Image (tube, rainbow, N blue to C red; front, side, top):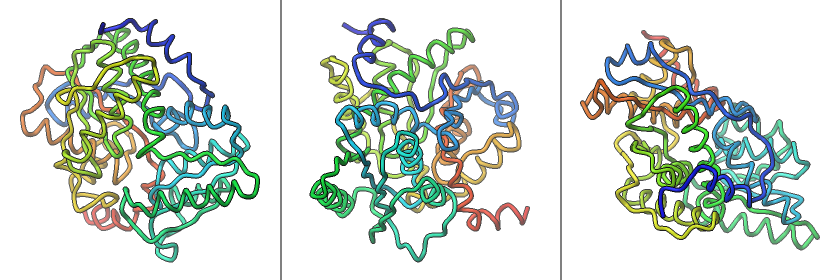
Amino acid sequence: MLPITIGQIENALASLPRTPLAYLPTPLDEAPRLTQALGGPRILIKRDDLTGLALGGNKARKLEFLMADALAQGADCIVTSAAAQSNIVRSISAAAAKLGLEMFAVLRGEKEKEEIQGNLLLDYLFGAKVIFINTLDPYSQLSSDTMESIKADLQAKGRRPYIIDGRYQSAPLAAVSFVAATIELQCQLEQMNAKPTHVFLSTGSGTTQAGICLGTMLLGASYDVVGISVQKPIDFIAPRISEKATSAAALLGLRLDMPGEHVIVDDGYIGDSYGVPTAGGIEAMKMIARTEGLIVDPVYTSKGLSGLIGWVRQGKLKDEDTVVFWHTGGVPALFAKSRALEKDLLTE
């Protein structure tokens, strides 16, 4: 029966392998000048940009469980795939180096067109073996096929590869980490005597949102979790979030289905496509930098923040509301997009 106690959830979490990679808990900070600038609800910021691993970000939480599972299975190398400026690849590369595992990164894009900057620069710095594939589709079959081919080649050489794929098989275990993160947030909210009405975050694969939605459901939390999609439309991503949350619950020994009404996604802030900055995102970047001295990246957290700003301006959030913006990190990508930002920043 739901809700269940924090102790019961923590006992279920403790049954899964976990290796420490993140500095936790991350702070929950007031954002008074951003609140004042928007003239709307009280805004708090959950600082997962400060998790520590490879310049921070929410991926460190997920990797505590994923890398522990890899080690438990005797893996000696990791195979993953994502965009050329992927935050998860950068984080996995760092975690693999820390744990003594070889890293193979299958990146979407054309090698000749990718500047060695931002996350890609860090991938190389951490020693990742980078393989480019000619597609930009986040759900490309070529991505999956290439990883499986690399895995087969490694196994033929006597290696023990472990695939991390947040789109598919790795998602439930990754989502579990954000059940733990939701407990962390709940404890901080109680210490601050804060009762949020909404939690906003950027949603890509939907794994982070799946974990937070599951955590709030288990705790009986009263706030809405709003995912601002940076990648796919609602009809594509919302069902996947529900599926990932349901599968994550099963890993915790719980049989429940994530109801569709518990998954809130706004796909109005994607812009031209995934990985391309938007005018609203750039405005959000400047606003939070100039009111709170905080950095959000140009294609992920900035779009999530632009969604929060949009909701305030559209009157969807009330002045008496309290909103948590979950800063999921991604800052290194800022430097890879400097040319896209240059005109806007230098012509003010």
